[in-house]
Image (cartoon, rainbow, N blue to C red; front, side, top):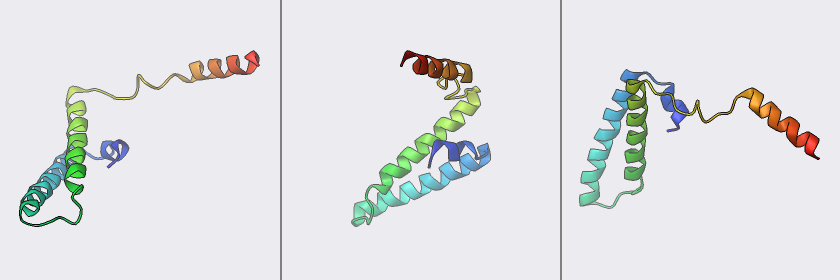
Length: 88
């Protein structure tokens, strides 16, 4: 799952999705002990998805907004573009 997709979900939906993935991971762990899995990397994907979901929940709980400080303002971008065009 992508972070944008996760952020579109509500808190209850995130918790439900975490529970589903944890259940699937539990079952895969037992199956992997008794037989070869078709997709052994699925466990890694599930673990990372759960981490992403928990991170978004934690951000919301703390009131953090990620990425807002990393994007430059439109004026700054326009100034840089103007400098580039006049420098040539």
